[in-house]
Length: 236
Image 1 (cartoon, helix red, strand yellow):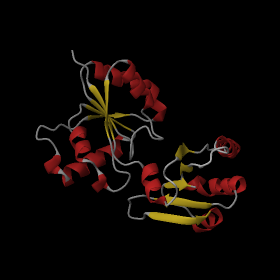
Image 2: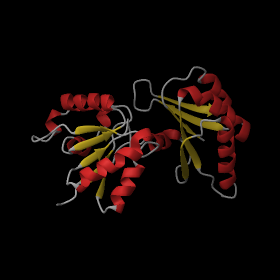
Image 3: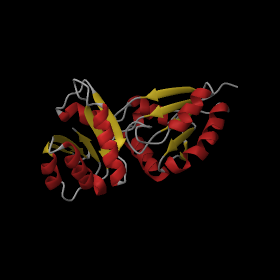
């Protein structure tokens, strides 16, 4: 029996109109769809069917949704691999953007590769790269660190060690991080204590109705985002 394929499907980071035609076709052709939140994914599938009916294959089928988030990844991955070995095609999506980028998926991708199962990318948006492209900061060399550590002492230690790594480079990379609203101000305070009152770019709610691009010093950012809401990308 032929093995199935694992599709890594990127979805919009906010604006549904950013979804790729290939992503739509793939979502409605796989047997199983791994997703962080089945309720949110169900809403997404319904919206796609409403707006993009003509792009959905005539022989489409709604995939079976499999909850696949950080806490269950190690237990769910073997189940998914078994489906793939049985010849079923599986897709993996995250809440938004490109899967595996600060999201679950690494375990099943690594195991699929080990089992000689095809892993096929369906590319699309990623918040980090989208933010970098409009930041006005150097793009030839950058470091993406995902989410900084939650605990302050670990966060400070990480930032200091990271800066030390790049200290001898002639051209310092642009650093990119994700942050949640409830930790944003503490992270900015930590940054100003470690790197000084540097110029910073903060992107909030990219591609969504309340999209905002802030450019200024870290201290100005702390004042500006005194009551932060939404999803943030920090670049400096």
